[in-house]
Amino acid sequence: MDSSSTTRDRILDAADVLLQRLGPAKMGVVDVARSLGMSHANVYRHFGSKAALRDAVVERWLHKVSAPLAAIAHSDAEPPERLVAWLWALIHAKRRKVMDDPEMFATYHLMADCAIRSPGSSGRGSTPGSSARVTRTPLPERS
Image 1 (cartoon, helix red, strand yellow):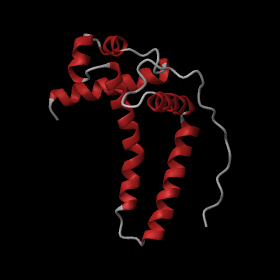
Image 2 (cartoon, rainbow, N blue to C red):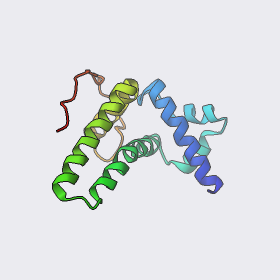
Image 3 (cartoon, helix red, strand yellow):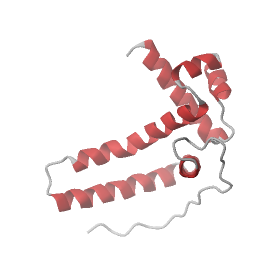
């Protein structure tokens, strides 16, 4: 792995932590740079804007969920079994995210809401006024 990829990953890791702690509206590129002991110009070298940085963090979050689902979708099982397995994997992955880290889920929900309100970005100029609610409802038994 070259140093550029390593720096990019370090920036994404720091942005991930700061998004959880500060939320998408308050986290800035300067905050990320300061937490890493680097200049904000270095962050901008890897990400052209705050929105691009947030988009990259969200893409990472989504990849963690979608990679296992892709493996199920491309398996050799029959289509009906793959669909059932895919849906259950998605339900369990999302439930785990909500139960294990409700603050992260709420942050992700806010960022997704921003993206919906402002297509093509992570919500530049729009910050939703509500946060995600987490409820603990038991899942039905898998047959």
